[in-house]
Image 1 (cartoon, each protein chain N blue to C red):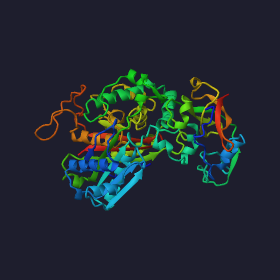
Image 2 (image 1 turned 45 degrees about the vertical axis):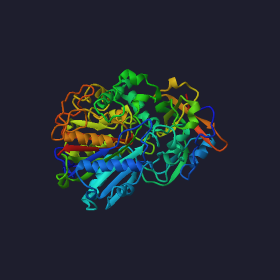
Image 3 (image 1 turned 135 degrees about the vertical axis):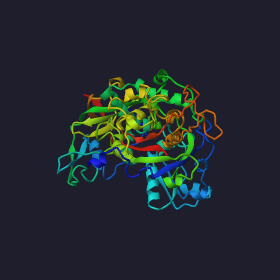
Image 4 (image 1 turned 180 degrees about the vertical axis):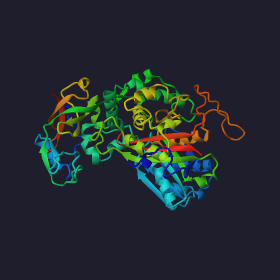
Length: 419
Length: 137
């Protein structure tokens, strides 16, 4: 690469020309489940995002979604809201899709195909298609990569991702207790998030004494499957100025960056290295900032260790020091660089990464939805008292990084700046 | 892993992988091997991913390797494996450099570790299908 391509001092390509202007979601539910279709939940989340932006149905003319064939396609939800589309696309995939679809949304706006794009994910991830549980997903016909795995009983997300962590422990001496701190910290964050499903703080001992799911993963190392829909709205910075809230300007996007192979992802390269190793060389130069400049991270916590592996490979610490990074207090509220201030997938709920983007948009507005009182201007009067049940707004948040995870071999990322 | 539940999934043969699974039935690990650059690759494909060569042959692996990573499953995701828990799933790096998925048999899960030397054993799970597994060596 030339010097200008690796220069991280100025933003490239996007240069704050696009923004996320609206966010919305439905409640995170387990137990009885949502009792609603993915179509109804998606419609409600998209409506909430449009209203949040201060837009009307006629202002939105593009739509993107992602799913594992467990959801409802964009044009159905558009129709249910009276939106006539100039562009839509529904892609296959789960985690790491949000940031990638933001990049696609920017591309289609830049191409003049449409003006304002909603990205949504709607899933009854508890009551219908469970990613980690047995059921519909384990009954689908064997195909592709599964030919080489499934006959050995090696198939679920936890089973297939955990070798990365096992190897990291071997290579670097990382411990289960260190990554348990990811759950501990996220549970403390969730205590300050009224919409989080699990708001009770847990301890390292709680994690390590929970039942083993797939060694080295305990139950509390695994995220919580929920029914939920989330939506975000992407548009140009020019149009963002007419919207209700301070925009979250998009500085840099990485979309489904891969290790050399992903079909047999333990096949190629160091096992304890994940796709972020490659993603960092796109994310930071394009953003014009580095990890040291970031105020808040949203590192995908499908499992405790996925947060660690991504923070490490995106350069928030040296390779091999992730166990220390996630357990030394850096990523707590009040710490140097909080991670998943909502409580993340481990505690708030699980909607394949999009809720972590919503959280950072709200953080950049300085209006995160905690229990602080709402002032006359309609914004919360944040106390910055992070004790349990209190504030979760990060003071003066200016830059965030979302690190999305599909699997060890594939990830996405996005840097946003307060507009 | 000692018994084969009829509901357990079996490999589905395709033109790409047929030689590998037929090799297993003859108790051989066969790897696709590029005649141009003299390297094996995995999973099987029609072109060498290292040099684009398409003059490929199947060569027998020593069947020896080391565990490159491993897990022990305590909650069965596939119902057919419920009777086997806790069972292991491992990645084995063969001497030829490629990594296969499998299970270690004939050893306690407590003995599993990265770097453990293993060799292939063949499990004739049905008259049509043989699965390679591994045992410590």
